[in-house]
Length: 152
Image (cartoon, rainbow, N blue to C red; front, side):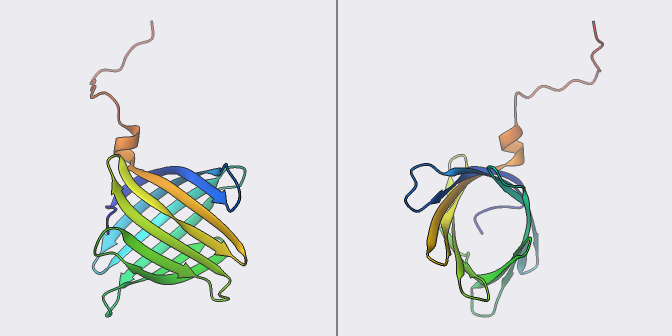
């Protein structure tokens, strides 16, 4: 999988078919790995909406692909992914078959690009995020002090 363990911050947009301007999408993601599995958790916020907590479990299967389960509020999706080569690709769907989500992960100089499509009924949206390691996104000058500053 292209994206590594740790904490990641994402910023991007969700664009409905026919729109010229998307809604801002922010995400906080924590990634943990264990033998044969990857767990992702965190929250995303779409401008104007309340934050949505999510969890994703990705497990290697005997066919050489990965099985995915996603939970976000009342939303439950499952699917499959190819994670051994770039770009990483995934397809998820709900049990009713009326909601589909695609995901592509690819390396960028500043982090990891993440984009895809969401199709619900006849509505189609595109989405994209730039994910940066929290350390990189919040980094600053390398200044260390051992003494507290006193107010003047």
